[in-house]
Amino acid sequence: MRLDILKQYQAQTKCLVALDSIIFGFDGEELKLLLVKRGIEDEDRTWSLMGGWVQPDESLEGASSRILFELTSLTDIYLEQLHTFGSPQRDPVERTVSVAYFALINVEDYAHKLSKSYEAQWFSVQELPKLLFDHSSMVEMAIEHLRYKASQHPIGFELLPEKFTIPQLQKLYEAIFGTELDKRNFSRKLLSTNLLIKLDEKQKGYSKKGAFFYKIDEEKYKKQFNTFLNFLPGSTS
Amino acid sequence: MRLDILKQYQAQTKCLVALDSIIFGFDGEELKLLLVKRGIEDEDRTWSLMGGWVQPDESLEGASSRILFELTSLTDIYLEQLHTFGSPQRDPVERTVSVAYFALINVEDYAHKLSKSYEAQWFSVQELPKLLFDHSSMVEMAIEHLRYKASQHPIGFELLPEKFTIPQLQKLYEAIFGTELDKRNFSRKLLSTNLLIKLDEKQKGYSKKGAFFYKIDEEKYKKQFNTFLNFLPGSTS
DNA sequence: CCAAAAGTGTTCAACATACACCCATGA
DNA sequence: TCATGGGTGTATGTTGAACACTTTTGG
Image 1 (cartoon, rainbow over the protein chains, first blue to last red):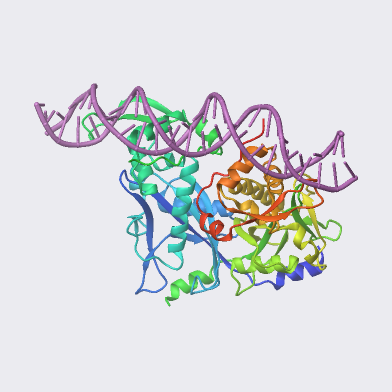
Image 2 (cartoon, rainbow over the protein chains, first blue to last red; image 1 turned 120 degrees about the vertical axis):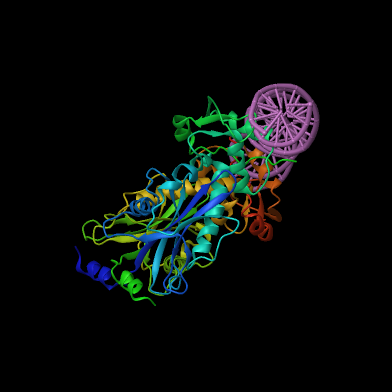
């Protein structure tokens, strides 16, 4: 190793590297965000994104899965790096570069798994509290990204239980985009992807007639994920 | 400030934070990447992306502009954060988290501005040399992102001189997507965006007839940038 | 039997594709 | 005058949007 190179490395100021997760969920009606209580002063412990430090021998993806697992006890979650935030003043305690991750989980199935060690709570994305540091900008970017992504890829499934109905899926898309959709066009478009497998079972309790459950064709879904599906749905009249 | 919080900050291992730029250019024929010579051993100085350290009081965007300016003397460049790379072993000297930035510049106009202090060279994206560390994955991701982005947004203009012809623009899109396009459909689609302003001047020297120059309507371009234009062009027969 | 949600088909407009010929000019 | 690239129009198929009625069943 050349000495001047080593010196150059040693001359650099190091930085704290943290990670924050924007965790989306869907309860059947509204798009939700999972927040925890956190703060640097006793008196102003505010709501914030779930986060943590990147450990010395940990990759960023590794850290994001670990942190999500600590909070939710879930593995195999849809997780995607969103953006890295690094303005010098973003953390008033000490300069910290934070890598934001974008996560999609299914509220209903896993609500009971939430760790008791955190004061965690689901908030509607419509009514978010004031957040720590620059977490509001992270959330804003994440919502924009969710829309972008959901318009191109059938990513919505990540937010639903394994078995879901078409009206449920439609409500999800309506929540993501904040619009109403025409159910005839929606279901036609959806079924034309051939990504759904119709089950014999019907949903009980929600409506009198009951809607058929579907599940996703995992094979095709994974294969087609990176093809553009132009999934932005047409609106209702 | 609560003491336990402060202690928690102090207990964390800090990390070197660097930045690498994937700089695209277009010479009228091929999509190019700007690389510099760099390396940690005398004997294996390899080609690499232009990069640098993030300074203590500098934002990430600030660092990326600074580093690009050092190399090219250009300001006001299209620059976008791509992804942060942080696997523990990516830099063999010491753990370094690197934020990759994606830059689009115009080769022709600014070729002469390249700093002499770096051994910099344009390479066709078709024939890239072996690169330092994980820079090849960064480049791969950047190319994919360029395609994605260019298919949705009229981002191609960033790679061209202020005045350009429609055949030039078509060549650029062909280079980005690695396909041939039908010029009739391409120009119709392009002009239908109403983003181009036809100039009186014609290009000289390249063809006998000469093609009209166009410039972009900056106003509309900026306004429409974040609308999806679905710009993926149809192919030729 | 009625209210509430599920499910389904058709028409029309817009857009994407395929395709071929004439134009301008420098050599 | 001819070779080279520039520029344009039309016909056809596909896709998305608008729109209304029938079905099921729990209360």
